[in-house]
Length: 238
Image (cartoon, rainbow, N blue to C red; front, top):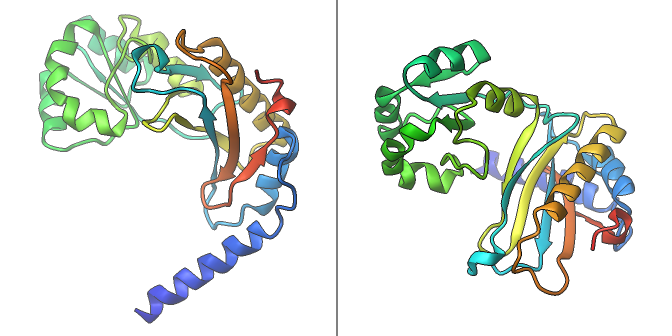
């Protein structure tokens, strides 16, 4: 118990030290990103995260938001991709660089709890079989979807896009998006470029049922760092 207490105190001290360096109520997005990098202090390479509150009520179908964005400077993460397909598409997936490829046998492995991948791509003909995996894949955000580009016949393109930095995002039950946009080790300009690409994508995919103020609040942080409030006007968000 003493060991756990020491770890918690150490983490708390690190977090409080980082928090003490946030002096403004809001920062322009480039300032916020630079500060996030400056105060990140974990012993591993932290991810840069955006947490965005939108004026959406996801209980209404016309206010759902689920889409993808290709980050121009990538995610900084090696994505492990699994593909469920059959016939010639199996070889296409292997050639394109998929990490795991299979048909019914892969579906059975997933049913047994083997989820050793970050992204699952499927051909349309396999989706009726994958449907039974909804309770396993859904809560983890791994269920293939045409909107997310993970149900497709163009397996090669899908694999290439996700390997190069394509990120899926979707609004949660409280109307908030949680999206990674790189690593804190990136050049600040590269993180800014990724962040702006995300903002443009969210605007482009604004649901038809969105009413009133669309952008309400933006906070960015590193994996273990405190939230830094971002001035929405600095992104020219509407």
